[in-house]
Image (cartoon, rainbow, N blue to C red; front, side, top):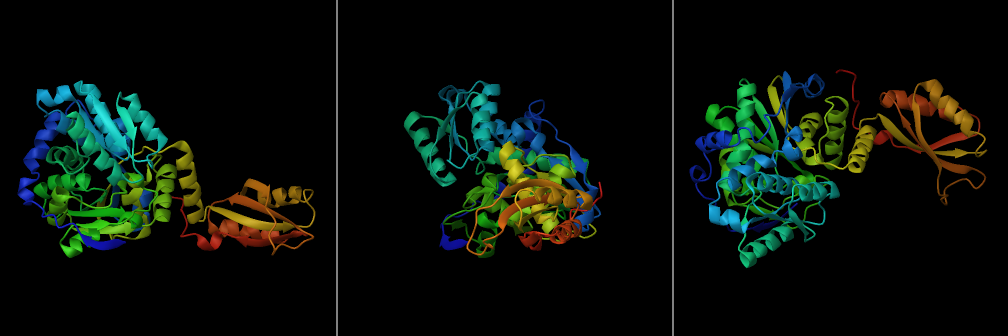
Length: 432
């Protein structure tokens, strides 16, 4: 999706951006401020991707619901008193906003956050809840970013960059430091990439301890700018982004993150939005954890086969869980259907609504669940003497739901005209 334009910016020497010592200093500075989040093992995900072990670094249970408090606090705690008195401004799609807002509350610094219109309401409300002044400006993050820079100049505020800042990168690197301590034998670590701050910090911490650890970035196909940049050895910028993962819907890396990613990240892979929905669903059902699409991207890469981890010990960073309940429900609905755990079907009935009882009994007898049923708008292809109905069935897998549909087809007066099982990507399995 790159438009081929090169920014022309030159990346600084990686040693001038961030070091393992910077991460160690951040670790001390954050002691007592952030949670040391758990590294939980998932046999389900390991079995499905063929890994020896998969551990989930659950930054979705961090303060503010994501890793962002680490970098924001580390940067703001080092501001001179004069800057603290003036206040800070930041731009964010949501998670950095909350990190800056909470850091400001803890450090007694006034904060102004500029967010794009795509930012979920749950993130805006949470940011305001930490005491920040929230300004909604721009369709895309880049527009919010430019507006925040203008506010910084016009009002004399200190700008706290969401990722292209050495202190922010060092703070995010404490996630990698914890992974290295809790899983010293890890072979591969998967991390989402938006602007690249998180993976830059994590790679710095991990590679300092063991240069052979493989660090893999994961991006949505609709915002996949990092791979083209690395292949061209120049920062490439997308002309547009289109993904459900608004938390990593950035259009490019910047100078510092490009320098670190180029030097310390081994590979970058992409996943599509359906992969993200499947990963969100598996995390909710099997790992009992709520992840936003951006946070689920590393798990999506494992489940979709975007990265080969056969026989390896793997850590996947679940970087955030700030997702509205309605959005999460919709994501898991898509994920269930993609996994073949749910099917939407269009029926034609010759006796509405009397025959609905027979439909309900047939579904129940098959062991499936009739999740919804409603009369559908008539189309030109519908038989004029029959009533079109749309149903949704839930079951244990594609075979189970196919049997349920067969039982409906066997009923007198019922035709199954179409269904969505042919679009499923696999089975969810039964392992815990």
